[in-house]
Image (cartoon, rainbow, N blue to C red; front, side):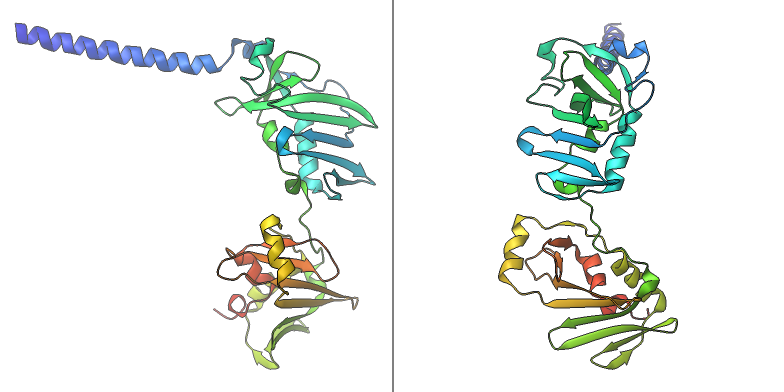
Length: 316
């Protein structure tokens, strides 16, 4: 009987322990979801939505960005001047105009740091329409279930829940807003490509509807499908990213080893120069237009293709 009593006691202890753990889990889950969420969602912008033409983003010590629309195109005007990615900006604006607010979770000032919506911890986001501010908000961190972004209007202590991860769309480096387009041509308009690297000259020419490839005047077979893919990459060239500080000395101290010139149907020539990566360059190709001053970066796979590497176009 004593043995049986011990077994029953152990079972009871295990059951109670399991119940305790379940209660703890339930408590943790429910504690992350404020009760105010049940109030129902409202649109951030009620009625006629504003036509946004300027955006200011201040990420504190991590830098700030100003985006402005000029003649239907978006530009970065601070911390430098450069064309912005219209797609990235318009996607951000579309996301903003469709924000649903799921209520206020707190109006205590001491809670602002907890949710990263204080002036020192949040991302300040301000948008304008026709020169007038239409939104001034501090964006904070996400909820634990990644369904909402904490937000606080700059002139209020109310901390709201914005449905979705909108904060992720704006908390970006200035370079991430840049337009990565280098060239934008119809691939069918490229008629000839010439690649010079040291004493080796490689050339691809469109003869009727067939691409003919030569190295130092000697013709080599190519896969038409593969070379057309490479031509398309060159015609619609977008960089992987922009050169960083660590890339600058390499381009400044060394001459580019490869030059690529392509001819389009109207007879214009376009040239870009390439620094092929060495053993210590982590597969990073550096590229610059011959008459440009912006240094672009490509990684190995796409870098090989923009210099028309024969291994990438030969018959398989």
